[in-house]
Image 1 (tube, one colour):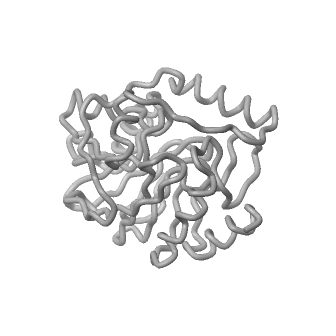
Image 2: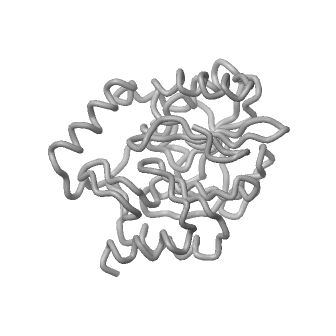
Image 3: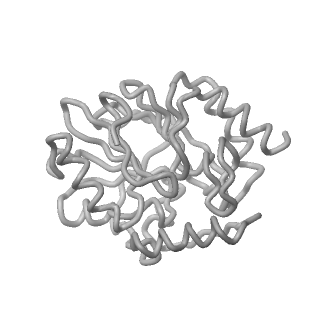
Length: 238
């Protein structure tokens, strides 16, 4: 799905990954689930690009529903996979998540897991080698993505600001569709290690100027960063 001249999404409102496209090549933000590989190839084809145009993957954190096809790109095509240093062990499968599910409803929860089964999301392939990144770093990748630390969902959760795409990729720092309840609109994400820290980390995003706020789960939000944070704090009762 094309969102803008430099911005594409693959997947859907249940699980999504993103492509930043410039003359220099393609940067992949998150890698969804293993079965999104075919969605990736199809989207690249529509753009007149191929896997050979991908210069790097940036993971917003190290959870399995964001690792998806990352190792396949690294192993088979030599594409470097970037992740925050605090989530590197998580992405390599050396440590596991320690999070709570929170509220859920049967229908949305079953839908999430059924989609995960269809997309191979229950068989996580961890990334054997990662390139660690740090808060404030601007990566030498198409779109010059800037790393913003937002710990809470995981120790190394990041947001990624790409000015040329007018976009802030937030991973699971927030969601616009709660996969366990079906509730829509900006709100705290489930499966979060430290919910209070995740809410506190949102202040790191308040100064970011971007129209698009793009989560790993939920519809793209085009109402700007400040409004999304206001909505999240309201939803969280803070």
